[in-house]
Image (tube, rainbow, N blue to C red):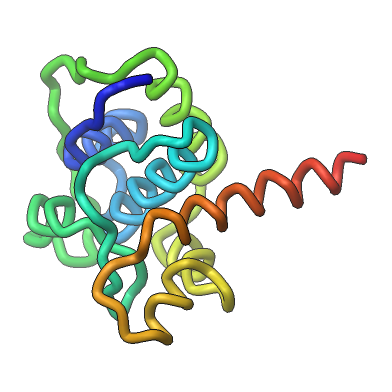
Length: 152
């Protein structure tokens, strides 16, 4: 349906939405959620980069390296260049992820990724280095199913 995008570009998309007012932890988790929702909704990964199992949750290495100098502080910058390369569907997905999770701080986002039974939790317990895409996809599909069940 669409091509995979650079996860750092996804990070800058969220930073632009927040006028740069995000921490590296928030950016990392938002990129993860965008990837997960893309797998569930479009049956396609958002980026080609694998999600790694790190002690503080799921992580995308390129996003970490792009913003690691900020530590736990607000990044305060974002790409002012046009962020093209996203399909309209991808942009709509990123906007939905922002609407759903953009108001949460890094600790709140991290707690969501650490829930028992989450993809990160399962991979961490199994001492895996990466979180399998199928595991992420199944988890987010289950979130959709539970949401639909609650609406009925």
